[in-house]
Length: 234
Picture 1: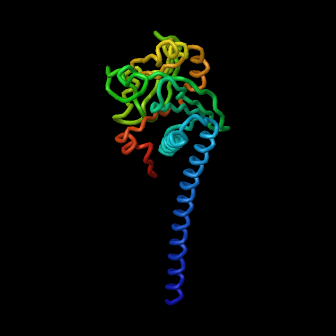
Picture 2: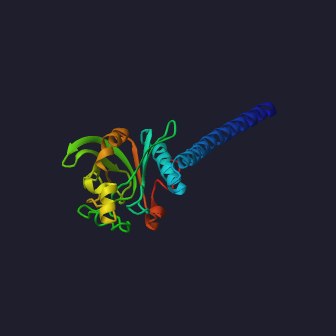
Picture 3: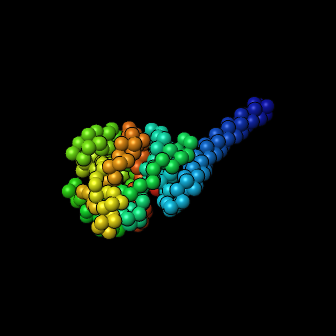
């Protein structure tokens, strides 16, 4: 009897060790993923010295969170920093697999979002305001603005009406340096991130079909409650 009891105790101990080792491996993998995201964010920030490294880091963390919770992997990330005035280049597009800066561009915001500087954001249809947060790109198409790229907002209550609102990346003559020089600021859209016509085709081709777009502004309520900025293991 003592032998059997000793064997059972050893077996139970081995099972506990196995469970703990499994948890340790899972925790290590989670930490490794976070560390890899931080490393990628730092590498992208070096490629775009005019960008705020904190914003780039937030964008990469949001993408890491989305992919960890079931979104398909992507190899392109566009970051828009609406805290910068429209007269500055505030759109960066990165390749992720072999980190590379593909575009550094001007981008317009919505007419209800502000003049030269953005101040107001909305998810409401008809608001003519830009939206914040993480988006996935869908298919490209030709519409009233020529070649355009549909966006799907991933954040409930923040940007999930983007498709319904027809928030797309498109080109506009008011999104050019010449317009800025003439008017003193970039023109404004109805909420779409509009870019200059000369780069719309390569930009759309680099971002279409399931890539990421991250739009930032230091809005406390969004930063505090965004599911993608405060990721937890499922």
